[in-house]
Each structure stands twice: as C-alpha cells, then as structure tokens.
Image (cartoon, one colour):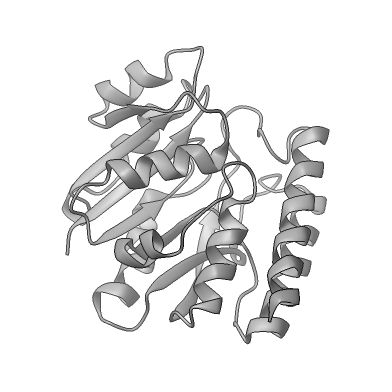
Length: 226
C-alpha cells in the first residue's frame, strides 16, 4: 500500500529538516510538507531534507491538511504528523500496521495513553483533549483517550468525508465524520516530545481558545444531528 506522509508547517525552520529526515524511508513513498505561508526558511529546509513542498497560502491548519491530501496522488494511506518534532516518525509502524493488516480504517496516536515528555503538553491541553475524548467515546462508542494530530487514515475514506473545517476544527471534524460513517477507528499509544519553537495552538491564548471552541462545538453540533 502506498503511503504519503503529510506535514503541515508554518515557520518550522528549526525543526522541519529533522522531522523529514527521521521518516523511515521504507515506510513511506513520499513526504509532503505543506508550507502554510511561512516567512522563514521552512520550505528550503524541507526540500533539503528530501520532502516535496506544497505551498498553501490560505492560512489555517485544516487548509494545510487539505492541500496535502490533494497533493497525495495515488496514495492508499495518508499520515499526518506535526512539523515541530513533537511527534516521532520512528513510531509510524504503530499507526500503519492496523490499516495495512485490515484491522482499521483510521488510527489515532494517543499521547495521553503513551509517553509524554516533561513540559511537552500544558495542563489545559491535556484536560481539553481528555474531556472531548470522553464525550466522543460516550456519543459514538469510541475507545479513545486523546485527539492528537499524529494519525493515519485510508485516503479514500478521508476524501469521502467532505471535510469543511479549514482551521483548528479539522482534527475533530475528521474524527466525528469518520465515527458517524462507522469507520473502524482504533487508538495506539505514541510518545510526545517537547516541540521546537512555540506552539501556534496551546502556546498562545488565542490559539488555545479557538482550539477549545472547535473541539467543543463540532462534536456537539454533529451529536445534535443524530
């Protein structure tokens, strides 16, 4: 099965080269770095490390994720991971194996059931992810503990979901719509490291508030439709 690694990135010059270089070459057919309007050397460092760089000028995490999906060509599986070195590409087998072996359609990497490096995730982010995971579990019967960005999914499934959220809501919308589709969703524990640089989400008050809003509003919106 062909695998494309998609890495949304905005001003990740200090980390992106290390992230791309750490992807085990035998586990992926290509690494796509989506440069989301960076003003530093993110694109150049990504190319030097061997990634294919796609430019997406519409700012927003979801917009970058969508651009990467559209660029993934004939991939069977797409994997999303962050460009700040917090996710460990060496753990790709944990996410790919359940799909390759026909046991899952969508695999989530759980930082909360895995290994958290000290200071890698602030308390409010851990609490928010835990609360939304409990809500999703109760509404859709999922067995999840976290809503992280390190995830693998069959490309045909993701394309069929009709993703709309082009900002912070993408990860939750993806999970909610896949659950409503009764896709086989499994969670695996992963490690989570202290990122290089400042987080655009949990590292700022605005980012934290917007992320919390989307994480709460989207699951509730879809739950009310049921």
